[in-house]
Length: 285
Ligand SMILES: Nc1ncnc2c1ncn2[C@@H]1O[C@H](COP(=O)(O)OP(=O)(O)OP(=O)(O)O)[C@@H](O)[C@H]1O
Ligand SMILES: [Mg+2]
Image (tube, rainbow, N blue to C red; front, side, top):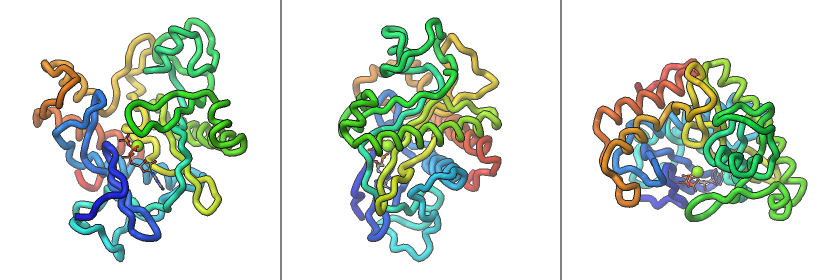
């Protein structure tokens, strides 16, 4: 069995010579644990969403192809299982900054705002409710932590780490891509509340890498149920989170297996997100 050069919570990266093969598995994580149950085709949904955005945006990116014919596949992996969940990508030098863009006040941003009136040092108008839409999206970078949670950092820290020119480019490009995606998603009834991009250098050029605006790297909310002042329903993991909350699991030990019904509903949610966004039918339905 081939060994990935990198294995994340969800994706496995294989070195195939000139390129990397990025394979999105059906693993799902919640409350910082990888659950023991797979969501069938989740990796395909994530890959198809990223592919859709890569082909739509006007910024250079790492996607070479999703066609695996003619490629020497890593030992032990079949074309059938890889199909739809795999991208051939350019090998890049990863810029070690998580480029978070927020369009709405939510999660750690909401907590930060409640105690400081700002989000990651960016001052905001007083009196905003939970999940309020910002007048303009904000760039709130974080450092990539090898272990545990990423740490929010100021723009000045980013400049110190990678230089002014690259820092400015990350900010401008990340805001640009988010804004394009947010406006497009809005036209499909989906709120893209926030997201995280990664960028890398390929032959001296800064290009968009990793996954792009998927439910794993972003918050997707159904627009017709949006209501500021409370937490929003999410498009993907809501059933999983709610079900886990209803069990006796202490979030501090190996999580339980998900019931078949939760798996089926979650799978349907992911597929729904792809189909609504892209207007295409999910091929592996
Ligand atoms: N074109 C590329 N060239 C080099 N590395 C890349 C490229 N695209 C993505 N990566 C890296 O590949 C990895 C993708 O794997 P994955 O997202 O599963 O892991 P992770 O982000 O480290 O961990 P997790 O998401 O589980 O917290 C990331 O480390 C990402 O920075
Ligand atoms: Mg990742």
